[in-house]
Length: 132
Image (tube, rainbow, N blue to C red):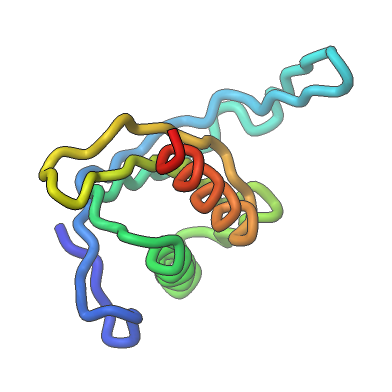
C-alpha cells in the first residue's frame, strides 16, 4: 500500500508496511517518582499504521503525519488531535551509511504528542546516532 497526495512536498510516496486495529490498554502518568495507571481509555479502539523506512528527514515525517491527520479528520475516522492524545506517534530513527544499503541500529521514541516534539526527537536522535 502506498500513501501519496498531489500536494506532498516530494513526489515520492510513502509505503505502508502494516495497518491494524488494536485496543488501547491504559495511560501511565508519572509524578515525581510515582507512576500511576489511568484505565479510562482502556478498551478504546485504535489504528496502528506502520510505514516503511523511507523518510529521509523530519520535514517529510511531519508532512506525512499532517496529511494522515487530514485524511483521518476528513473521513470522520477520528479527531486526531495530537495534544489531546487522540493521535500518538512513535518515531523510529536509524541512520544508513552513505555507502551502505543496510540501516543502522533503530531507536524508537514513543508516544510523542506534538509536531514540535516529533521534530526535536528526530533531530536529537539523528545527531546522537551520527556522533556515536
